[in-house]
Length: 161
Image 1 (cartoon, rainbow, N blue to C red):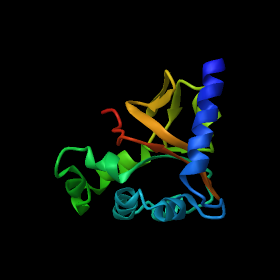
Image 2: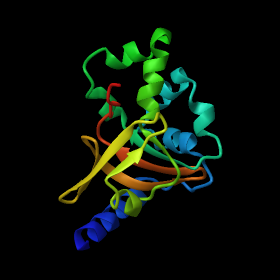
Image 3: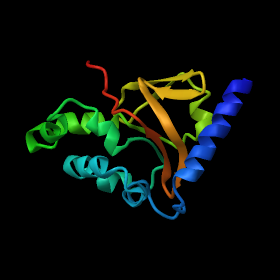
C-alpha cells in the first residue's frame, strides 16, 4: 500500500509538471495545446471522435504521444487513417478512453477498466510504474474540463473478439 501511495504521488507530480494547462480546456484542446499528441488528434479527427471528446464527459483518456505512435510498424498509422479503415481506427481510439474520471490514485488501485469500446484494459503496478496493458503511464492527472489525461508510451490495441 505504501508503494502505491508513493507511485500515486510520483504520478501526480509528473502530471502537474507536464503541462501548465488550466482545467478550463476540454481533453481535445488540452491534448492539442500540449503539442505531443498531434498524431492522436489527427486520428481522432479521422475517426470523427473530436466532437465526442469535446462533450460533457467526464472521460479518462490514456493518451499515446507522437513517439508512441511512431513505435508502431511502418505504415500502420497512415493505413489506419484511410477512410476504409475508420471502424478499426475508432475501435483502437475508443479503447484508450474510459467513461468517468479516474485519477492516478484510482487507476493505481484497480486491476482493470472498461474502455468506451467495451473491451477491458488491464491495469498493473510494476515497481514504480503503472501500466495499462503493456503501455507505461509516463505522466498522470493532466486535468481537463471534461476529464483527465494520463500519458502513455505505447498505443494499446484492443483484444480481438
